[in-house]
Every structure is written in C-alpha cells, then in structure tokens.
Length: 391
Ligand code: PMP
Image 1 (spheres, rainbow, N blue to C red):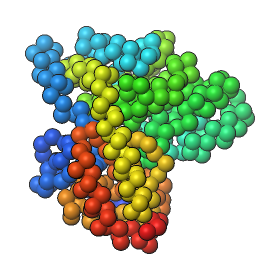
Image 2: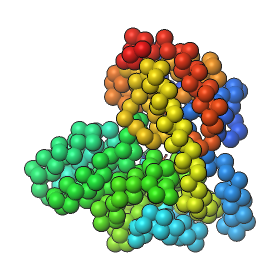
Image 3: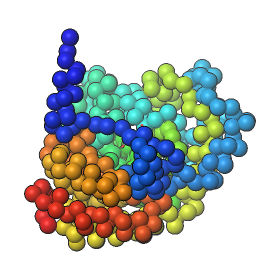
Image 4: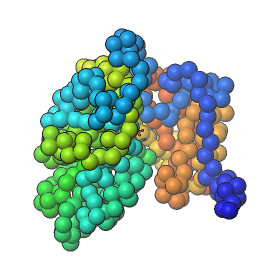
C-alpha cells in the first residue's frame, strides 16, 4: 500500500504541510482561532458584509417562509422563487441578460468550463488561473494551452495557430497576486479569433468598478465583450455560493449541460434572499469600497517604505513576496506572535520559489488596525532578510 504517512512527513520537511485553525465567533476584523484572539488580515470578506446586520436580518426574515434546506436539485423541485429572485438581481447588477445561481465558485468553474468545451475543442488558460479553473479544464477533456500570465500577445499568437472551437478563460482579479487581467485586450483578441471569453471575477465583484460591478465593468466591457461572467458570493458579497451571467441562450445551455449545477442540492433559498440584501448594500454604499481601497493605498506606501516586496496590485489582495517556504512561515508566525493572522501561501497554490504572505484588507478594518499591521511588519523586517525582500 502507498505510504501516506511518509508523504505527509516529506511535506512537513519541505515546509508544505497545511494546518487548519478552529475559529469561533464572527470573522471580521478580529477572530478567535484555536482559542487565541487575532486581528485577521486573511479573509476575503473585502467589504465587511459577512457580519452586516441587514444581511443577517434578511436571512432571519426569510427562514420562516422558505425553510432551511434546499431539499432537492434545481431540476427536480429545488428551484425556489428565492433563487429566481437572486438570479434576476444578479443579472441586473452585472448588466447581463440572465444569470444562474451555483452552490460554490469551484462548482461554477468546473461546471461552466466542462459544459462549454469538450473533446476536440481548445481552452486557453492564464498560467495563474485559480485551481477550480484548472480542474474545470481537466474535466472538460478539451486540449488545454496555458498562456503566460496576462500576456495578450502570446495568447493571440496561440489563437491564430488554432482551428476549431476556442475558449479563453481567466481570473478577473488573480487570487494570489491581486492584479487584474488585461480584460480589454483579451476581449479584443477573442473577438478577432472567434473565441468565447470566460472571466471569473471572484475577487473583483463588489470591490472594483462603478457601484462594485466588478473588474469587467471597470474595464468598460459588456456582455458582448465578455459573454460568460462568473462571480462568487462568499467573498465581497459576504454570503455563499456563486453565479454565472450572460446571454439567456448560454444560461439555458448550462442548465442542460453543467453537471455541477444539475447533480447537486440547491442552496438554502433564504441564503439567496440574504444575498439580494447584500447586493443592495454593495450597489448603494460606495463608502465601504472607498475605505478599503484607502487602506490598500496606505499599506502599499508604508510597507514599501519598510522595504517589503509588494506585487502589482491595486485590489484588497496585497501579497508580500518572500520566496522561500520556511521564511514565509517564519514571518507569518512572527506576526501571529504579535496578535496578527496573515497566511503564508506556498506551492502548489503559487509557483515554486514564490511563497508569500497574502495580506487581504476589508472595509471592516480601521486605520488603527492597519497601524498594528505596519508596526508588526516594521519589527519583523529582519525575517524577510536573505529572501527576495531588499531591506
Ligand atoms: N475562483 C477564484 C478566482 C477563487 O479565488 C475561488 C476561491 N477562493 C473560487 C473561484 C472558488 O469560489 P468558492 O469559494 O465559492 O468555491
């Protein structure tokens, strides 16, 4: 039998062993993890809406009418009026003709990619796309070509050499780097080479663009430019689930073909109504976006002045590049010793030699919270020495 214990031991030696913490209570901005109170800079609750009283009230108010569980898959008898309302709200919010509510972003990417591409087709995928996109590509059985990160010219050269059905897929905001895909350029080459463009805006939705409509709206692109838009609801929206939005014909096709939509229990309908409440807040409250993006600018200025190596990101994802796995773990531990939770991200989530601390900001953070982080980073600068951080 395969020696699973040995494999785990090897992981530990390489600084790649992953652990879970047990969190009690709500998440933002402080949490209790394994009994210890920590100020968190690692959640994706970018707007601080996961604990917003209006969303919690909306969930409570919906429960007596809808019950708790989804009861069945959408195509059997699980497709509740509450799901329908959310889909209409999401279509309106993203400026799309229609939308489809999935249980998670992972399932949305797996289902959409494997439904829209198959044997004999070619998928072009950014080298830094999220794991769920990579897995969706594998599941589709299409030929997969990875293009250099954000490199529109490289993609265009590959598209020009390929015949047959072509699908291009990219994160809108890259989850571990925080940078935004060159969406206008991608849309242009997809149009020129008759390729279907799919954008997963998990980390842009709610945060970027007018009224938080996401990275695609920020780039001024419509449904014609980006026919398939995927968004997750467990990040800035602060609830759970995901959606795909686009032309009604494509959504109808996905209802027939996306196995991760068809063969799973529908999400609790009350959650769909709480999500509608959260989208109302996102749409009308620019102050949350302005606050979190203000924290980001200040962090970038002051952490760079301390000598930390930041990435090309203007989003709430602000990685500190370290390089070595053990060094990243040591810095994360030193911050934890000072009451801060910032996760070390290591391969295979990021390329080998590119371990980093993934600092994320939320509208729930105050300027004083940021003071704490910057003070701790100042004290820990020596731990980044000898890595890629020039201090
Ligand atoms: N896409 C991207 C870019 C992500 O970062 C993630 C999750 N972190 C997902 C999809 C998956 O979304 P979910 O957590 O809703 O499964």
